[in-house]
Image 1 (cartoon, one colour):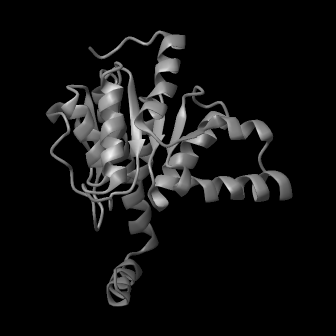
Image 2 (spheres, helix red, strand yellow):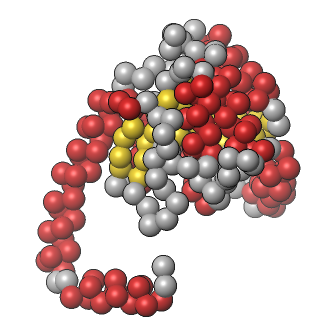
Length: 237
């Protein structure tokens, strides 16, 4: 978005009175409720699934795209469906792998000014549209039995730390969080250990056990197979 476009939006906001802003906010509650209700009703029937997060900018020829597709495929062969953000890049790879494996393929799409458009590998009855990020994020964590986090940007990091926070504070179960790509994630892990843990003591040692870092599809899927066997989840077959 350009500075000129920013100024236009600001001018429009200035023209609204405080009462108009409050009224719009009040009516937005009903739209938010509708998104929650639709999401709950649609996703409550999908069965055990794993959410796959990662960059929308990853191209199909990229090794991370291919790896995400393979992880998704292998997850379906072990009874799990796949949930993604429904867009291109890693999201498309996740849905493509699930589609190839004849597994459940869910897309939680959202309207964005760039990058986002739904991919063709989502089950037709499981392609949901959202206007609100926070509603969409609830759906990711409420109906997933774990998380695969591929290399990505701010949105991917947001989704990762959302899941970590909810598990750390025991708001959701201790589902597997698997970070794929030791080269990509090692710098962040070093910073967490040196800065958050040792220097500032804002996390505890056991918090580092909330996630694992892997480099292959087999390593990633093994974490979910172990979880599957312990909790005896019903597969999607």
